[in-house]
Length: 201
Image (cartoon, rainbow, N blue to C red; front, side, top):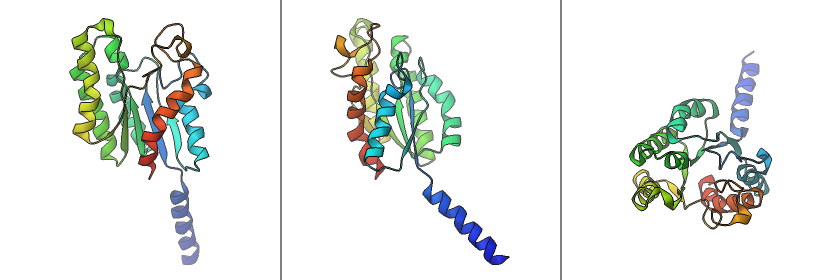
């Protein structure tokens, strides 16, 4: 009886050890592959890249189109509890900017999401976004400055503006001018990959 119990415990421990570590992507429509089949989005393409590198990590895409930093904060506890991620890719804030919401509140929300993830031992990769210049120079600069400030204050890795060299290219954007099309998705995955790979070590 004792030997049976012993082997059961060893088996359970082995299963836990073999369990694939999880990466959660907490984002908005950019990460939710708005206007595209989900498998064509950059998050799915990044998963394929990880598999090609023989990575054990499994990506769970928790992104929702239209999500704000406040919405992400409202969901983060449940995501952390159920997914227990090792890494969180945080791609939020664009909708805060497009709605003209407070950059200070956005910063506080992103900071709190990051702290809660760090409290369970997860690493955070922050993906920065920009908003169109018609929102006014002061607000645009205040908005974008949130990302490097957070990266420095919370000691997390920062991905520069995700849509750099994409947002102004009509061949890479959907008709709405806000969302990257299918042709841009591989480029997005390629941009994130070199910042993510060191966190897998």
